[in-house]
Picture 1 (spheres, helix red, strand yellow):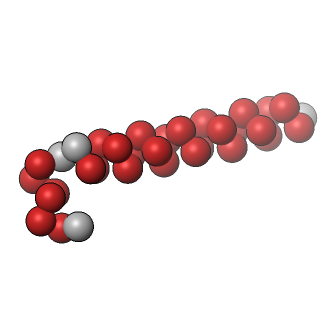
Picture 2: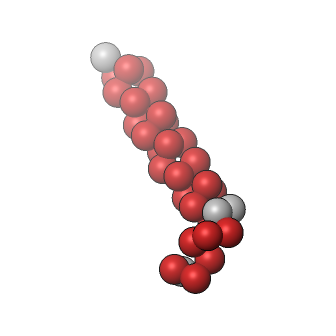
Length: 33
């Protein structure tokens, strides 16, 4: 169970990082920083 919980935390962290990278790379949002 601990491994599954860790995997979920890693997946969540990766999703958050992916969202940050996608937002930073979106030229339409440059003015919103």
